[in-house]
Length: 184
Image (cartoon, rainbow, N blue to C red; front, side, top):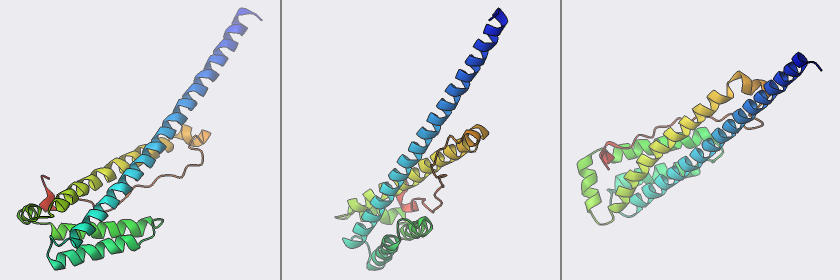
């Protein structure tokens, strides 16, 4: 082969290697993003479970008035009654629990009084768990959006770099901590 033929062959091999390396790194990034979504979802589910457990415990131990305890217990029961596979119903029930907690713990002064009573540390831990739910959902949704953006790129769709992974979906629910939990 003459000099220019070797150069063309070498250039073609270099381009093929560069494309393979780019596709491989893109697939690796997409895989890491999918793992980040899974971790975010696990963290969100654990935060929601902890919030439910603490809300149920706060309703059961007598630190709240009977009406508030009943409202919280009913909201927790509605969440527990949903099928985990039914995302819409589960997150609607979780939003209802958020609304009940917001109504019960609306006044910071009352929350401080409850926390100062025996058993009130459960309410303080509930405040922390409400903040963790909000943060967990935000991190999860950020991971989902980053993954969806990567998957919507033409190169990913053309070469099917996403594999068989399902397209992740954001979680839409009310998750703002009650006003009474501000600063906790």
